[in-house]
Image 1 (cartoon, one colour):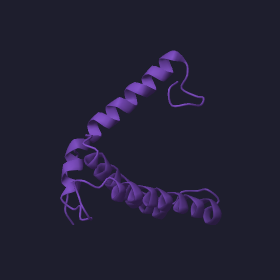
Image 2: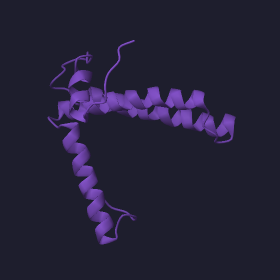
Image 3: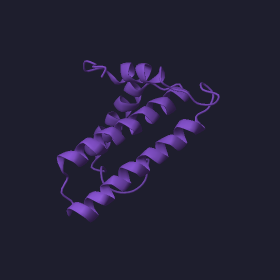
Image 4: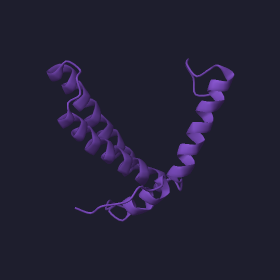
Length: 115
């Protein structure tokens, strides 16, 4: 198995791109967007099974299963960001800034994208 040291999200995005094989790569945000949705569905299905079969208790086995599925989510997220000419580092930083702003303004909970 290949071993990697801790890395920045940008580095992950670049390394993951080396395994990207899909139609019209570089000009096809639809493929990774659909893959992202499918992988999120797989995560949700595993969580459903944890609730159904294990009373909501996350076993070490399911933790590892979820780790793999979340890795697939991350891969597709990186591929989609690449297709949109976005860097995962920038996406993450912008998200933290947005959440910090909402917290400062007391609108962290509630509805709407522009709170």
